Amino acid sequence: MERTLYINGNEEGLHVVVDGPSLLIKKPQCAERRIPFNLISSVVIFGDLFVKTSVLTTLSEYNIPILFISKWAKNMNISVPINYSISAKCSKIEKIFKDAQKVEEFRVWARAKRVYLQTDILRKVYQWDPVYFESVWSWDYNFVSKHYRDIIEFLMPTDKEKWITVRKIVKVLFWNAVMDYLLDIGFDIHCGIIHTQSAFGLIRDCLYILAAEIDYQALKFFKTESVDEIMDKEVKEFLLKANAVLNIVNRFENLRFVLNKVLKDIKDKLDELIIEK
Image (cartoon, rainbow, N blue to C red; front, side, top):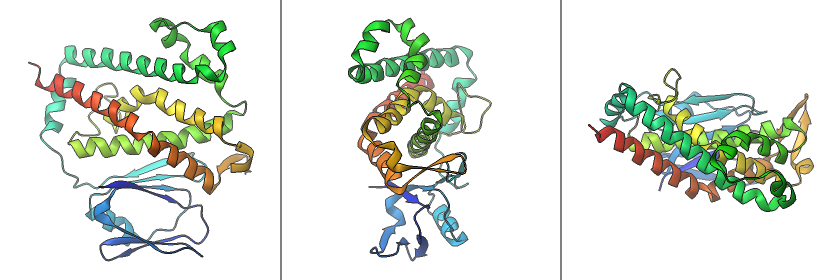
């Protein structure tokens, strides 16, 4: 089964090289890891890592996307092979955003799904501060859609820089997983229905729906970890230590089944609109 390979470039002495049909990962005082290319669906690289061109081109030959996130989670770059397979669904999905009625139907559905996930997340975090929630809360759809952001901001750490750093990393993991899923099922990742004028438009559409799940995983990080022990302040920016990145990745993978269920719901809705006459 193919899986995402996560590489923390902030670890000292880390080297990644091509070794036949595998990637070889070397780290001081650790056993070498050999990972066959046919077991890798995508690669996510955190921080600064020197990678030879041969590694990048070989990953491209195997149709493996690479996502880079900078040391302080400020910037993200994506390398997608130009020869990844595109099924007939790519051209069919264009029929959706050429039909104003179908576009509106998807946007209404996406908005409702987004608020449903927001409500679900707020139910999960209710127990963190029942007194606060009892004082402000209503399960009404309009209340959630209007006040969700205010409630999340109340639950955030007081230092917003820390929140921004962690949430960006979580969002990168979601971005990569959504990209993997869409490429695997044969949808064009650029054919957005909500984000029609943006590169990676369909990925952005999915992340719009999934925003509450991203918030939840970032909140869980601060709820369960001693932040001062895992975040260093460098050059007026917060840098996550290696164990903190591992913590975020492990939590993401443990909750990946939730993401996959939502992505299947999105796929089913798109398929429904594609076959509608």
